[in-house]
Amino acid sequence: MGVRKRNSANSSKEAKKALYFAKLNDVPTSPRKMRLVADMIRGVEVQKALGMLKFSTKEASSRMEKLLLSAINNWEQKTNQKAEDGNLIVSAVYVDGGRTLKRLRPAPQGRGYRIRKRSNHVTIYVDSVNNDTKK
Image (cartoon, rainbow, N blue to C red; front, side, top):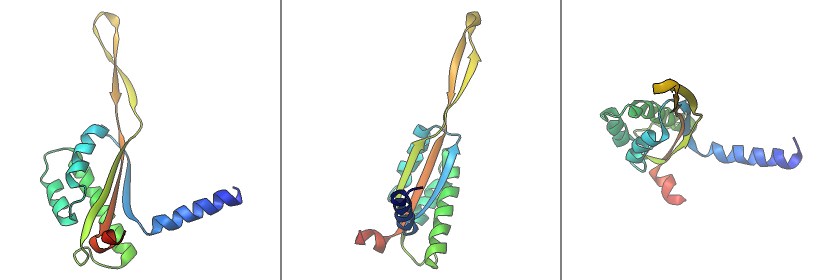
């Protein structure tokens, strides 16, 4: 690795230390369905978002709830504070497409219909309200 590349990698690592996030890769749900759940909680206070996810009927909301709890715990570990003390909000949620598994389903007259089993990558960023207003 060259010096310029190493310096760039180190600076991006330092920038990530100031962010509080959790990431979940290869969730076996289509990105479109996961984005519906992500749009529900984006910009909402954390305790309210947890309640919304807990009582949502969507299947993707249970995975998103676990990921949000992980992001809250990451914030608590890095700042040495409790989540109840800091006014935490879900500052950003990103849902990106993951790998697609291609399968074949038997069809009439010896044909095969292609089935695409999609997956996604979800990233949740959590931040306190007073930090968010400084930026």
